[in-house]
Image 1 (cartoon, helix red, strand yellow):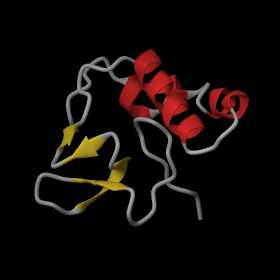
Image 2: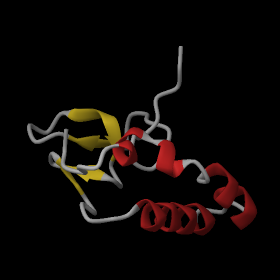
Image 3: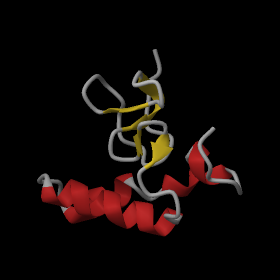
Image 4: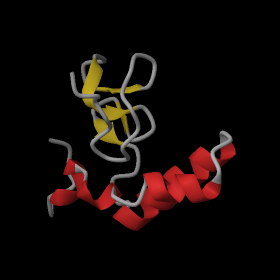
Length: 89
């Protein structure tokens, strides 16, 4: 089975880190850092801003900076960033 990842930042999705849809249910597409109550937490963020935010969070939780940079290098390929419209699907 393929591992689910947040379509905005790439964080692995598992119980406890899933964002919430407008009805309060757990999102199958986004993590809690990117999506709450049916809306993006940073709706105007750019890909570069998201990557910097992810790197910062990862290094603060103990990841080596070089590894955080490597893991986030393809953030722009995630589904959220493939659309010109960043509104909630």
